[in-house]
Length: 134
Length: 99
Length: 108
Image (tube, rainbow over all chains, first blue to last red; front, side, top):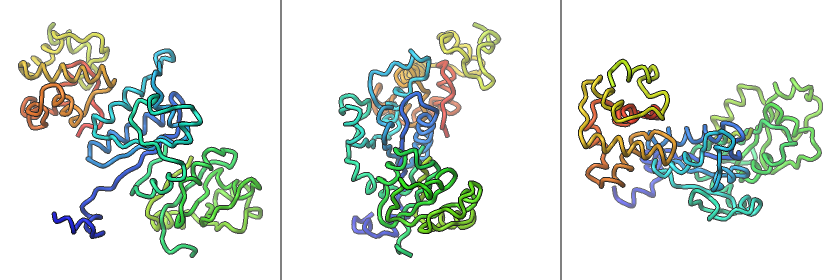
C-alpha cells in the first residue's frame, strides 16, 4: 500500500479494524467485572482486534503488585493480567491522579502502563471506536 | 441541535450519590458528546448537587415516570422514549455505559 | 495407567478435573486412547503449556502458545503451522488435555 493512501479516511475505515478500549474501574476481589473484562480482552485477541485497557479510578488497584489472593481463597487475576502481553495486548493506561491518590508508582504496578493526566482522558477515549466500561 | 457532530453518547444509570462515577463520566466528556440518564440516573435531574454540564441531556421517560418524577425533572433535559433511545444510540459514533 | 483409570479422572469434555493428579503416564494414556503418539516435539509443547499455566494461571489459546513456544524454542517452532502439523486437533485444546490443564477459553 502506498503511504499516501493511509491519509484517505475512507481507506482507513475499511482497512483498519475497530479499536477497542476496555475500562477497568473496580479494585481486586470486588466482583466479577475485572475477570469479565479480561475475558473480553482475550476474546478480542482471538479475533485480532486491537485492544487497549484503561485502569480508571479504583481499577488501578487491580494492578498493584505483591497481592496474595490465596489468603482470601480467591483466584489471582494478577497472573491473568500479566498474560495479556502474551496475547499481544500491551497498551495500558492509568490516570496520574489515581496513582497519586493511592501512592502508586510505575514500580508498584504489574503492567508497564502509560500514565496520563486526568484532563487527557476524554481525548484518549475519543480515539477509540468502541468503549466497554465494566 | 447544539452540535453538528454526534460523538459519544454517555449512558448513566446510577444515581448522583455515586459521586466518583459521575466524576469519571464527566472527565470523559468532550464537545459533541451527550448524556442519557436511565434507571436511578434520572434522579440527577432532581438533585441540587448536580451541575448541568455543557452536553445535551436526555432522560428515559419510562424511568422518570416510574419514579414519579414527571413533574419535577429539570426542564433543560429532554425526555425520550425507548425507541428514541435506540435511535440516539445509532446516531452517535459510540456509546459508553456508566453503571 | 489404563484407559478406564485415565477417563475416570476427566470431565465430560475430556479435561482433567483435579490438576494435581496429572502425570506423564496419564498423558500417555490419554494420547493412546486417541490413537495418538507423543514424540519429543509433542512433549515440548506439553511442557511449554504447563509452564504457561504455572506462570499465568490459564490455559493459552493459539497466539500465546505460539509466542511461548517461540520464546522457548525459537521461531521455527514458534509458528502456528508447526503446531497445526504436530497435532491432529486444535493444538491448544489437544495439548491442554494431555497436559492436564483446563480447556482453553476463546480458542477458535
